[in-house]
Image 1 (cartoon, rainbow, N blue to C red):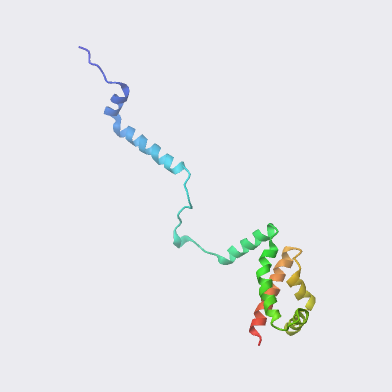
Image 2: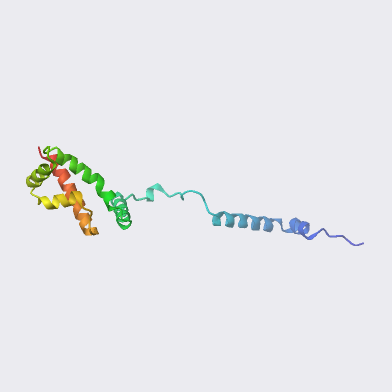
Length: 141
Protein backbone atom coordinates (compact mmCIF):
# COMPACT_ATOMS: atom_id res chain seq x y z
CA UNK A 1 0.00 0.00 0.00
CA UNK A 2 1.11 3.37 -0.94
CA UNK A 3 0.93 6.16 1.49
CA UNK A 4 -0.35 9.39 0.12
CA UNK A 5 1.68 12.33 1.22
CA UNK A 6 -0.02 15.66 1.81
CA UNK A 7 0.58 18.65 -0.45
CA UNK A 8 3.92 20.41 0.02
CA UNK A 9 2.69 23.48 2.00
CA UNK A 10 0.91 21.27 4.54
CA UNK A 11 3.89 18.91 4.77
CA UNK A 12 6.24 21.88 5.34
CA UNK A 13 3.95 23.31 8.01
CA UNK A 14 3.75 19.98 9.81
CA UNK A 15 7.51 19.47 9.87
CA UNK A 16 9.09 22.96 9.77
CA UNK A 17 6.55 25.26 11.43
CA UNK A 18 9.13 26.80 13.85
CA UNK A 19 11.38 27.76 10.91
CA UNK A 20 8.50 29.16 8.87
CA UNK A 21 7.23 31.14 11.86
CA UNK A 22 10.73 32.52 12.50
CA UNK A 23 11.04 33.56 8.84
CA UNK A 24 7.63 35.25 8.90
CA UNK A 25 8.56 37.12 12.09
CA UNK A 26 11.93 38.14 10.62
CA UNK A 27 10.17 39.41 7.48
CA UNK A 28 7.64 41.36 9.59
CA UNK A 29 10.43 42.91 11.67
CA UNK A 30 12.38 43.85 8.53
CA UNK A 31 9.29 45.48 7.01
CA UNK A 32 8.58 47.35 10.24
CA UNK A 33 12.14 48.77 10.23
CA UNK A 34 12.06 49.75 6.53
CA UNK A 35 8.61 51.35 6.26
CA UNK A 36 8.49 55.14 6.65
CA UNK A 37 7.07 56.44 9.90
CA UNK A 38 4.86 59.44 10.55
CA UNK A 39 6.05 62.15 12.88
CA UNK A 40 9.41 62.73 14.48
CA UNK A 41 11.44 59.96 16.00
CA UNK A 42 11.51 59.85 19.77
CA UNK A 43 14.73 61.04 21.33
CA UNK A 44 15.85 60.65 24.89
CA UNK A 45 15.23 64.02 26.62
CA UNK A 46 18.37 63.59 28.73
CA UNK A 47 20.49 63.51 25.57
CA UNK A 48 18.89 66.54 23.95
CA UNK A 49 20.89 69.71 24.12
CA UNK A 50 18.92 72.85 23.44
CA UNK A 51 21.31 75.47 22.23
CA UNK A 52 19.11 78.56 21.99
CA UNK A 53 21.91 80.82 20.80
CA UNK A 54 22.75 78.35 18.05
CA UNK A 55 19.08 78.26 17.10
CA UNK A 56 18.96 82.06 16.88
CA UNK A 57 22.10 82.10 14.75
CA UNK A 58 20.60 79.52 12.41
CA UNK A 59 17.39 81.54 12.07
CA UNK A 60 19.36 84.71 11.45
CA UNK A 61 21.51 82.99 8.83
CA UNK A 62 18.41 81.59 7.12
CA UNK A 63 16.73 85.00 6.99
CA UNK A 64 19.94 86.59 5.70
CA UNK A 65 20.37 83.92 3.00
CA UNK A 66 16.80 84.31 1.83
CA UNK A 67 16.96 88.12 1.69
CA UNK A 68 14.75 88.72 4.71
CA UNK A 69 17.23 90.68 6.83
CA UNK A 70 14.76 93.57 7.14
CA UNK A 71 12.35 91.23 8.96
CA UNK A 72 15.08 90.56 11.49
CA UNK A 73 15.74 94.24 12.06
CA UNK A 74 12.13 95.49 11.95
CA UNK A 75 11.16 94.69 15.54
CA UNK A 76 14.41 95.98 16.99
CA UNK A 77 14.21 99.16 14.91
CA UNK A 78 10.62 99.71 16.01
CA UNK A 79 11.54 99.38 19.69
CA UNK A 80 14.45 101.79 19.35
CA UNK A 81 12.39 104.31 17.36
CA UNK A 82 9.67 104.21 20.02
CA UNK A 83 12.21 104.95 22.74
CA UNK A 84 13.86 107.68 20.70
CA UNK A 85 10.45 109.28 20.09
CA UNK A 86 10.09 109.67 23.87
CA UNK A 87 13.15 111.94 23.91
CA UNK A 88 11.54 114.78 21.92
CA UNK A 89 8.36 115.47 19.91
CA UNK A 90 10.31 116.26 16.71
CA UNK A 91 11.72 113.00 15.27
CA UNK A 92 14.83 114.66 13.78
CA UNK A 93 15.61 116.46 17.03
CA UNK A 94 14.92 113.30 19.05
CA UNK A 95 17.40 111.37 16.92
CA UNK A 96 20.04 114.08 17.29
CA UNK A 97 19.44 114.28 21.05
CA UNK A 98 19.73 110.51 21.48
CA UNK A 99 22.88 110.30 19.37
CA UNK A 100 24.48 113.10 21.38
CA UNK A 101 23.47 111.59 24.76
CA UNK A 102 24.79 108.17 23.81
CA UNK A 103 27.92 109.56 22.08
CA UNK A 104 27.09 107.87 18.76
CA UNK A 105 27.45 109.63 15.39
CA UNK A 106 24.00 110.72 14.25
CA UNK A 107 24.43 109.42 10.70
CA UNK A 108 25.42 105.97 12.06
CA UNK A 109 22.30 105.80 14.20
CA UNK A 110 20.15 107.07 11.34
CA UNK A 111 21.61 104.49 8.97
CA UNK A 112 20.99 101.67 11.47
CA UNK A 113 17.36 102.77 11.83
CA UNK A 114 16.49 103.33 8.19
CA UNK A 115 18.79 101.67 5.65
CA UNK A 116 19.00 97.98 4.78
CA UNK A 117 22.36 96.35 5.52
CA UNK A 118 24.71 95.90 2.57
CA UNK A 119 26.34 92.72 3.82
CA UNK A 120 26.26 90.30 6.71
CA UNK A 121 28.93 92.12 8.73
CA UNK A 122 26.99 95.37 8.47
CA UNK A 123 23.80 93.60 9.53
CA UNK A 124 25.54 92.22 12.64
CA UNK A 125 26.96 95.68 13.40
CA UNK A 126 23.50 97.26 13.03
CA UNK A 127 21.93 94.73 15.39
CA UNK A 128 24.70 95.28 17.94
CA UNK A 129 24.32 99.07 17.73
CA UNK A 130 20.52 98.97 17.97
CA UNK A 131 20.64 96.61 20.95
CA UNK A 132 23.16 98.88 22.65
CA UNK A 133 20.99 101.95 21.99
CA UNK A 134 17.87 100.16 23.24
CA UNK A 135 19.63 99.07 26.43
CA UNK A 136 21.25 102.43 27.12
CA UNK A 137 18.05 104.43 26.52
CA UNK A 138 16.23 102.15 28.95
CA UNK A 139 18.89 102.54 31.64
CA UNK A 140 19.19 106.33 31.40
CA UNK A 141 16.75 108.62 33.19
